[in-house]
Image (cartoon, rainbow, N blue to C red; front, side):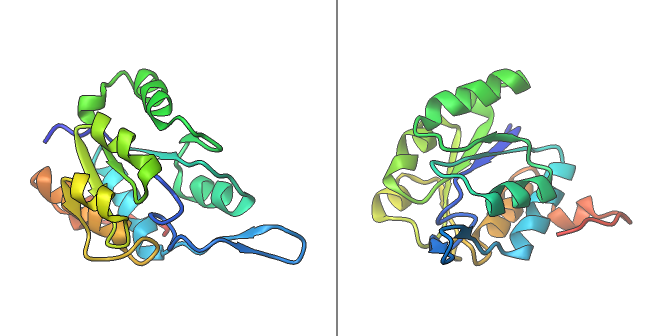
Length: 169
């Protein structure tokens, strides 16, 4: 498998899809630590990471910064244009991209990429279009499963990326 980039949606993929607001109107998001470590290890195996989301928030930006995901397009409604821009930045094509999404807005991006992934909580149309569906829901380890799956497709394991290094989740 010649995947060089894993691009992810956020709500429903990196989170469980719940959108919480404080009394002041600020977003609160919950991310799974296993997903974070999986992403960092997949990156150590040579896969670039990107996030494309229709929304943005301070918690999301903080999480992406913590994970070292700098290829990002937030408040983005045209995910294919965003993917093409990121591919251009990296000097790759959509034939080298895996995309993980969960809702109808993600279908075009999944179809444009070489490999589509979905969490267990994805809508039926997305699961039907995906090349692989996690047994776990978004925000509950689906991204980690996807990272493990892609590593296996590469003929390795995420654990192989550890090799005596410390990686924060």
